[in-house]
Length: 217
Image 1 (cartoon, one colour):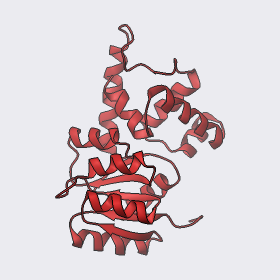
Image 2 (image 1 turned 90 degrees about the vertical axis):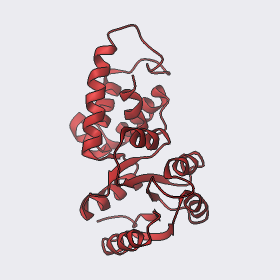
Image 3 (image 1 turned 135 degrees about the horizontal axis):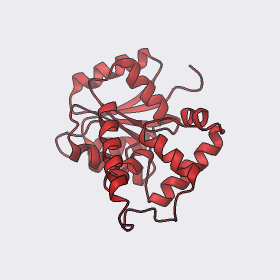
Image 4 (image 1 turned 180 degrees about the vertical axis):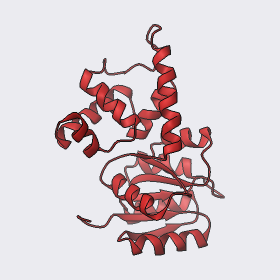
């Protein structure tokens, strides 16, 4: 484990869940800097505390996690990693389109959650494998549709280069920047440049948002 501990804000309406998450994350070297019981408090605390990652539940009384995610991302207050009990398409898509950098289910074990927090804090995206499978299936279906004339879902900043297409394929598979660099035989810095170009051409706000755009082609 290298580098400073990621600073995390917990947003969940169940106090017992927040307490359990705090104990577990702090035991694994994560710095929990605050908590929130709903989306409105999450936004306020993100402004005040400026965490690296907000661990966000979606279904909360009062303001929901999706609208809170959108505001946190729009204001560049933190990256958002969704942690929820539900994986319905509307929740997955809503969170990703709001700019969430990752999406995990609460069935994830401690090691998976800690690794996801560190990945998001380092600028990578994370998707639960079940969500990733749906995104890949949708991408395959979209590839068939792409044989038709280009639609509004085509890259807005120009066609992808061959390398950018390779990077997008890796994003859809949930690969980190380091994994992409190893697979493609290029540096992590070069990967980051290609990721930025892909996001710009798709008009995406994050890697997971890019995957959602591809799903809806």
